[in-house]
Image (cartoon, rainbow, N blue to C red; front, side, top):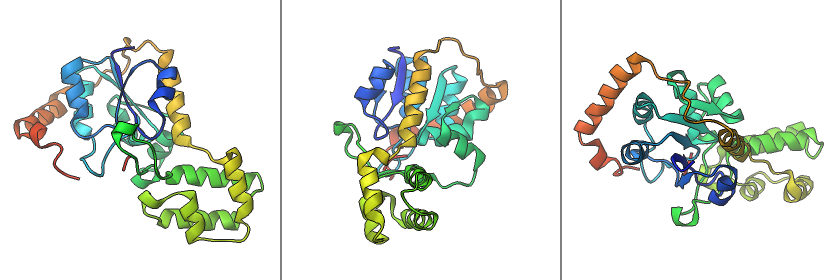
Length: 252
């Protein structure tokens, strides 16, 4: 699948992902990347998993819609991909996974549920904090297994929500909301209790695509999409969008 491009960073390593789906792997998507790849490579499909947003502008809805208008299949999950898919699935972008479905059902949910800080692209954009969504699911699992109480679960979730996303990790969480009972939880986390729904969703989508015939496109966009949104995108290009696309201010 040399003509399938996957934007991936902290959610999974490129090595693990490539073992699931042999494709062309790129750093987290940012503004203009979808447009550039479509122009240079005419891809069969684009897979949006991770996206940059802090030091560069995030990928725009109109460039994804423009790609769809060119009959490029666009999939999303886990992080920025799940966000954009929940917003654009009615236009043909295909979402996958629990996080995508959660965002689709909760239109006012915060973007920072899936936001993590990440290291440099040269090192594979590794995660250096934990996503609130993953913390929430992990703590719920700990409660269901009797590791912590319902009250303590609620305390930790509230504390995690209050942390800046770049500081959001379990060690910081125990620091800002300490409790004598946390040693049991900490042991449980170190023994494999920690869960990443973001990673699970990414593995699921890549596995699904590995078995799919991506040359068969069943989600053609409407004529209205082609007529209105492609024109809007063309106006952006005319206004010098491409030249200025990386001049403004993590990962989602």
